[in-house]
Image (cartoon, rainbow over all chains, first blue to last red; front, top):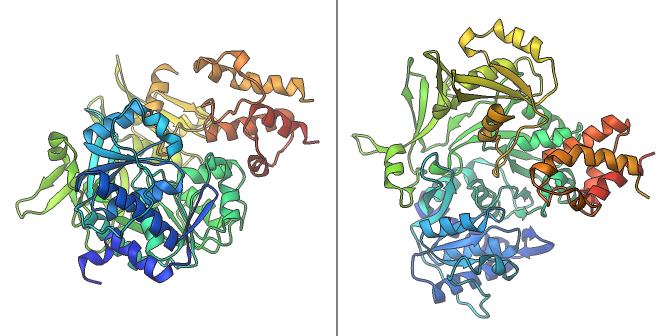
Length: 484
Length: 85
């Protein structure tokens, strides 16, 4: 198991196909596929890639909730090629840009979606192959996933199969997922946390259950109907389910393991989840796409915190972590190194060089732009983004520090403070998602914060706007602060 | 069959958002899916229902309602409250 190829995603799946061939591997769009059936569909895709496309190229996979998307990802990887997921809710123009930037050579999409692609591409579209051999080619690259970039538009992160293997090496060893488990698949296939969904589940011979379209409002029923035992989502989902009154005590007795990642996990959410899923454990994960899925983990144990957010945790074994220090050596930008650090951004050398750095000893690092603090036990705590930091009248202000204080007055509610550039300089506006007496809140803040850190306004929102990844959309909040 | 007063309340709650999206009132029919049309996101939909609960003094089973076909249509929301005694 020290063989680096042991945890290669293709090898991991092949092993499960051999061991668990008759077990259910995937439930999607009303279909149920065993490992043997998933294997055959993936082979058909691998054969098509080999017959139709250049060796080692990139292949787009339209990430719809259909078996072909999953077989597509597996087949592309088996053929020694890399996949580029396209988000079904994004406009076709954005797909085109991604495909162009990643120099995609073919597309896998169900025939029902081909009409959306005609007119935007002349690339070959997948058609099922009647006969196929068992194509197995090693390939360096696993996938290219696009993240939003502050300048120059989306950046495609190039992640290798060795990067994914390094993640799976820890995930499959550390987390107790079993063949009888039923795992969620809530992340869009264009979000790298979906790679965890697929390969951690399949690496253990468990069943991956994909909810139907419009699932966000049906999560409680989905959990019960599908007898879900392993959960993975963004923390915001807890807030939605709370509002739906779906988190009654003991609602989800079958849940054994719950993972959260993608944004800060408020302690209030962790507590609410623990009440609804009393027989399970909660793990908070942290990691940017550039360092492959997740790289820090924090097992949430009692006693739970009452305010603020759950720590990011400690690094996986083998991961390199360092803090680029600011005033004190324990606080600063988090840099990540080791086998999970991606190659860079496709066709974006300048953007790559800006954040992927090589130190004098030859170690490659990814500078996350996340400010962290390391405590006495080596555990990392999230302080905020480097790039959200602002100066107000010469004073350095972290908007998240305002939120930390506001949070102590909100109970289960959350606050998001944004900095807005105005004619009078930078001003802070705080949004909260619970009704309350904002005048009293402001009075309380005055007692805890220096004057330059006080928000100009506290605005109540019914809920925070979310972007397509389910994170709080700060850009939309800034719009509101300016024009709302 | 659907309570016209209740329907008007729902309409008034989604009117501003609909106008911002450039939807005319004639498009706001009973079979309009509030989510698929992009009018509301999931959180917005839940908030609409919670708002209606406050206004009508009725509490609905949102989880069960979401399992019914058409539960997220304009008519579905009106019916959800109409069938609640």
